[in-house]
Length: 315
Image (cartoon, rainbow, N blue to C red; front, side, top):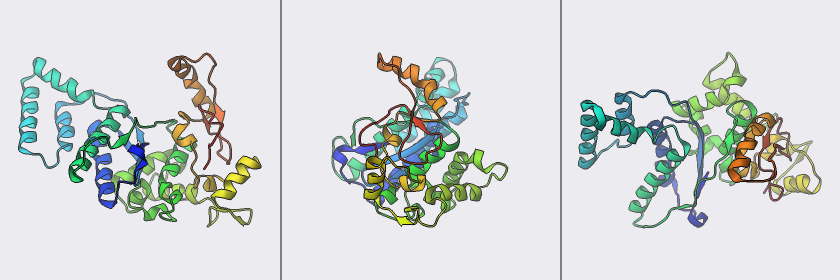
């Protein structure tokens, strides 16, 4: 997740649409898979899966490079021809081109850097402004790539416009992965199918994945805010959790801001989180050992995070 400088609400529908297209375009270049995303007026979320980077042919390298320039200028056309000529020559010149391109692929940091830089250039040029557009570095959470952790993170991202009060149903918000999948847009529907691949079993269809995702978003009843016959709102949810130490249905909690999904560092089963604890402890040079902390406040199932976030978890 990354936010605009000072949290300014700078993006209207046009800006959101350009950023939405760049999220997909640069994923193709970098060779990463967008599972879902959401673009808001002052920030965006994207859930990325990074496949193992195998051998990439010169033809594929150039195809990916050209993806970045769907309407190339004369300078860009000339640059593409130079790269193609260097690859055709072979030897040291070709190897330098390969290294220069491959280093930008199969890496989350490079992906986010490219998205943010290219969108900043477009935005500043379009609005006749200059200077920083994004606040600090992006926030990232390492998510276990299957089952409940992956599905819950995806639902949380898709529910951003619902939490913001823009729509009651994320299918009605043009700029999120779930809405694209409902509209039968291929890449978004494929991402949803990857998220729910284990759950849908042999019925590996876009429709089955959509139904499973919608069930998570809305829960078993027609109103996700209805808990034991009572209609809840955000203030009641926070009171039940923080003052009464209660536990609410997941569908209700996903409609609140839950910092586990942006600041939890690692999210997955307790075993998954523990498997990274020693490495993170060494990287941060902490004396106290880190541990897996079960998520509180809802029926999260087996979810745990590395950062306990004792204060202001929910809002």
